[in-house]
Length: 340
Image (cartoon, rainbow, N blue to C red; front, side, top):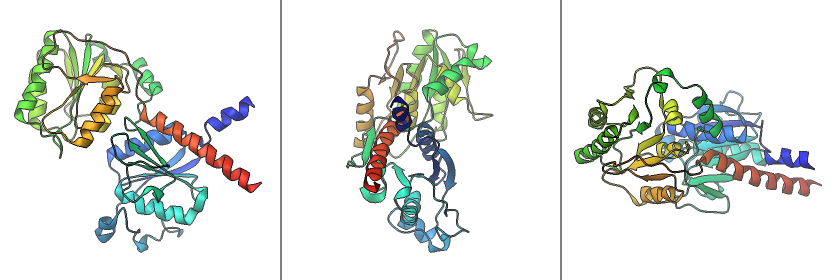
């Protein structure tokens, strides 16, 4: 009895799977996070429809020239046990596979496909998204690959340059301008003033920009911390982002990235979120839901002291996987009953 319960608790472990994205890094991170949490044996497939076929996605079909199901296609038998797709370009492929493979292939979409809840067996959306339905699951943060076991492994092998930094070590994760947040010069200066006050309290820094970080923002963070012990990654060599997350005593993250904020809140360490000018109802809902977990707090204009607080680390991938496993096991049990 106990052995069966243990098997049923992870019904998809070792199952074959395809991950379908258009190759964007943020999408790959999310799909890998869920696939790893489910224990899938997966292959990643990148799609890049062009012309009218890209314009019609996610509602239209796959270009017939791709011949889904034909042995010369990238998508043919044997069909996998699971398909995970994300991004509008991937949805026509998932629907085509679903038609060819039938119910034996369990389909999962991450993010709102915009093509209706019948697109897949399971749809995950972040809690700040408006889509709801009987096959829709939500979590406050997006899935990622920073499990507790991975973070603990990173903490067991601290790079010497990080180990040399005095505590408290502050990871500064910089995003940048997008369609929602403006990052005015005044915003950059506010962030710099806050970081400078942390430096005055004896903090050290691990600073990493993203591809969207504008030059003035990086320069402001550079100037604010130039007299403090620090590591400032400038894009040369391997990105130390993972080691920065794992080994920070506290984190400062800009509000413009759902992924970065969620990954910071996986560490269990205090997270300060800096909000530049701008915002949107959707981002506001995200940050309100995140604040309700107790993980982050707003970045002070100036630090008088460095606070500490505890919270349960947020792991969207594990939460999503647990819900998928329960629903898949119920479906499998129901189908086996019908076949008796």
